Length: 335
Image (cartoon, rainbow, N blue to C red):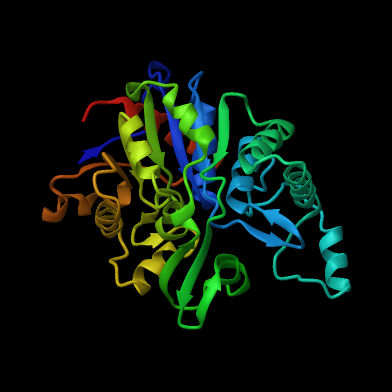
């Protein structure tokens, strides 16, 4: 392994960076990389497995978190939704006995309404996302593209039965014991054609792929399990880098550690690395761990892995950008 500190000059690197993003960690990383790209193109591929219908509207939580982060409109404290949000519609919805289990703020609702209008006018999800990114003020150097146009919906099998992801994540607060994860519709899905076209325009020595510090089961799996996605990324990338969502035996946020434990996996950066390498063989070139886990990197099971350690906790935007700068340099450096 290589221990490194985030102090390199990323401006010397020229490449397209493709970020696979789900959840708050993926959105924060996308924002950090876009802030340090310095003229390089950043493509953020968002998880659509969390998407669901609510009040007749298509809600795309992971895509929207990326859009809000890149446009500087996300609520930094909550890590989701809009900053300076109001809740008049949501409060009235509760007053008239509407569904109140999923919170939608007024500004957030405006985005969902515009997406619904675009989709009803015949635009696809990718095209609608491009329009939303423009209206929100996402920088032109960053392209946000849903992983697939096809409906892929994450369901979980638990000790309380099968349920849709949002019911488990929001309605049940991840309390049921998870036994398995199912990506409904994934077998009939394919990577977004716009993503395929974007990657085919660049040479393989110009593309780096980064798997964000996202939940591997709930955020990355719905992307990587799309038929053809892993081959597309592997064929186009000069390097694929994966960032551990587990730090010091726990997840900073979300149920990744809980799920690993319930599936009988070691809750550690090493356990995550070994599971990912088995689930997605020959995909990842470089594994990035937090420096807190550096001691695990010398185990016999990991001798053949290129593991790099640094501070990966993106506790505020400035620190996140520092990590983004280090990551851009690490992507381009030789093993």
